[in-house]
Image (cartoon, rainbow over all chains, first blue to last red; front, top):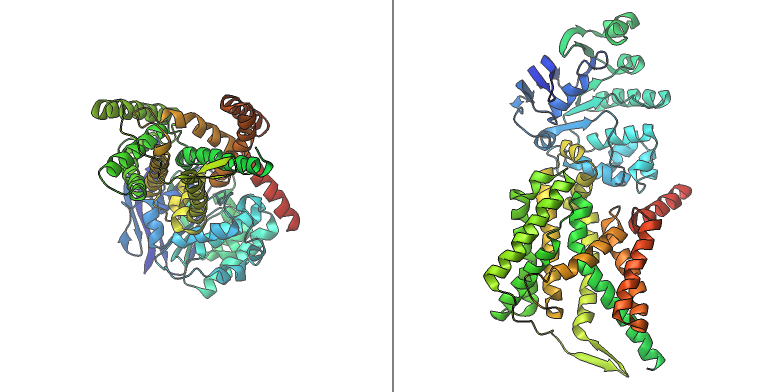
Length: 234
Length: 298
């Protein structure tokens, strides 16, 4: 079953449309990447999927239900976890409070399973009462991922997790995503430019150009640096 | 005056002055700190609280219940204000300033037209006792106790309830909170309603100590704003508590030694100095200190 279906989506900001008819699908348990040069609309696509940006036309279907008319909070409650570019953790809330904020995602309302995220990111446990803003960039990225996952959403939207993060932590995030794929059936939509991370985790990828999908890449395409470079490098 | 009576009297005055500042400021600081709205109608919301308490009390309701009625009445009124007017001005601080000022004029003049220049006063509940040459009013002791209780209740709400967590997250980054499943519009309505309700509660509690009149709110506005600015918005509750205590600690001894007028002047001077050395308020300075200590330990 398709967990996410974006159908001919048109969206943008006051001045112009950024997305000019984007169609993508994700099935359960897949990690699908979206690649493309800066400014082709990758972040805009993710913002339109979570609902921070309203569609001008086209549809967004989540688990078979049309959510195009829903606001962002309603979509999150249906089970979409969102990790924005630049992380946007709450700097003045503690690590624990940031994780509790993830508890409003999804429909499960049992006690939050903090241990489940400590298992992946043990450093969070030691810093549980520290304010989020005092963490390093890489730690904030992992906190944002943990926040999105703590209530087990069905879909995770990851916007450039490697941005401003040191290489060793990018590798750690890649290993984590592989582990997540084995241990759960969450689907991941990954917007990324980092070759290593793309090649480590992607099942397939969409290449975007000028606000539309220009092509699809298989695993062997993705593992070919030249093919990737043709879609990403300037 | 004997030494122990003097010490008691000083402590009592300190407490009443701090309680007055805290009660005057609490509704204002919640709305300013959580929503970044400078609510110039704060004094009139306190006035409405005082009117609800006066009218219901003279209609036969016991005073404590009249105070509760004021809280819920003004909270309800605040929710309507937010839904119809205030929400159109989020992110436009000057617009919000002007529109709340307009609301305050309408409320003050409207009350004057409907109820006339004065309302019958409420007798201060409870009596007074004395210890040597020190005499004190029971009611002010109750107000001090209520202020302390309010601090704990607000602390609990903002630290330990879902609403409190959502409100603090929304204050920092409304879009991200929304994308994590928080209905931010409802959080704003609830927060404005809570701030208004607290203004109403304070107005009702201070009503017996004041003349009940359409423009009575004005007397609370200046001390409320001074307390809020000195406290800062980094941590709303610790800011309000810290600044009421410090300002009271300056005002009280000088007021007792040189008279009430000098006490007020001292309070203003102290506020000026504090704002000069801590432009982000007391709560910001406390926060920075705590961060440094915690990071050293980690």
